[in-house]
Length: 335
Image (cartoon, rainbow, N blue to C red):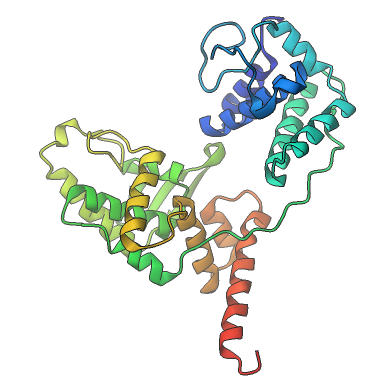
């Protein structure tokens, strides 16, 4: 192993190049490992994953894509790698205790543990270590939290606040309709190209996590909204400056970002008087919940959502169960 080559950088490159993780997911893995590195170097200074004196550079002193490895100036890459390779079960357990003592929630601790499992599994495969020191640490039992969703009346109220006589208003209505009609992730939405949508067949081709592709039907409301938006866009005086590939563009003609979609949603939530904690992902939850409430097959919903495991989709059956109980309590004379 090259002592100047960071094990974390190797792992992140593996996630992006071989596992096809998104840049956002890879950054999350990197951030967890950076905190662990900081803890190993100095447990007392590692709170929050930051150490004093970091200079925002990669381990070799050069900037790199994504978030740089957090490293105190006094430690070399060779020392950091040696610290990571020397980790045993006891040291890993102390890190978990460190997180609990600082009141990290169970879901965050579970995520950081999953990151370490993946990282050391990678090191085992590459022959850097003989065994995974965190393999036997049990994941904290998670509190069951049901996803938030909007009811159909709230969805209609949200959509009605878009001024579809303007290009940007028509775009926003098409965005909201598309998120709710297909259940796609906001990252998948902004990555859509015009070529990915087949309006004649009412389907879209989506590239999801791990670059896995799937075909999802879109409802007539979303089709109508997208056609109207594209008509206004083609007749826009700024057409020459528009990204010709991107389906959803900003006022400057460039591909819309996930952050921009969130800002637009906040605007319409405020206008509709709805809960401002609702996010684009809530529309995904609403899609899945309403589909199952109306009798959709669980496997079909799993396919449309792009879930690898059916158990991930099954959380929405709990939502429909809760809805049935609510309706029972309201309607039954002896409830």
